[in-house]
Length: 181
Ligand code: HEM
Ligand code: HEM
Image 1 (spheres, rainbow, N blue to C red):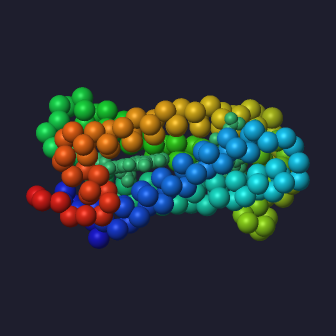
Image 2 (image 1 turned 30 degrees about the horizontal axis):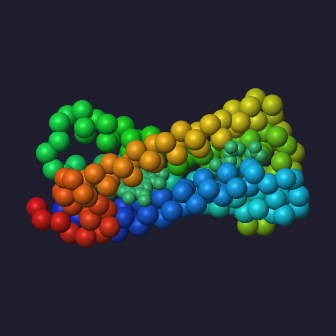
């Protein structure tokens, strides 16, 4: 079940691609909603954005627990030390952002006096957690989103470099394939 150098576990691979697709989709979805005029339809899309975001928070926490138990994947190929440090830093930032995005979104909503619902199921009642400081911290949601977009671009460029230039199996291993030892 654990990750090895040659093969990553189903949980690592499954959570990576599930959270990756959800985060990329939610970044686009959030920016799209932001471009809309206020309307009941925008409100409904916002509710959907929040419900998916809360679900991502649960998955992201599960993933971080899994990484903590398992350690990060062992780097393939021969790379200078700074390269390993950079890769770990980028992975750490990505993991952090997967919890900071939903958390700041929740803070912005609750602090602003809105409730919190998960696909129609009320988790926090309207107005129950209205608090100006919490709302102000939550306002970093948009800024973190733009930083995350930059870090993801860097991460995808690195994955492509491993695939096309280094040809070291890094991408294949994250696609669930077993690579040569
Ligand atoms: C992985 C999770 C999430 C991602 C990637 C994400 C992404 C985004 C993005 C890109 C925007 C547009 C930012 C902008 O205003 O420039 C946005 C807006 C927003 N998000 Fe999220 N979001 C996530 C989760 C949540 C959650 C869980 C909530 C609340 C429970 C939430 C509440 C909001 C709100 C209220 C706005 C609108 C802000 C405004 O009107 O200016 N988000 N989100
Ligand atoms: C098309 C988009 C993506 C591609 C091609 C991709 C590719 C990869 C590859 C090949 C690895 C393995 C690195 C290694 O073995 O050292 C990896 C690891 C990782 N990726 Fe991505 N990735 C993508 C999107 C994302 C997104 C959107 C996130 C986060 C929001 C993310 C977060 C991570 C993290 C945290 C790791 C470290 C291992 C883990 O925790 O699963 N990736 N990615």
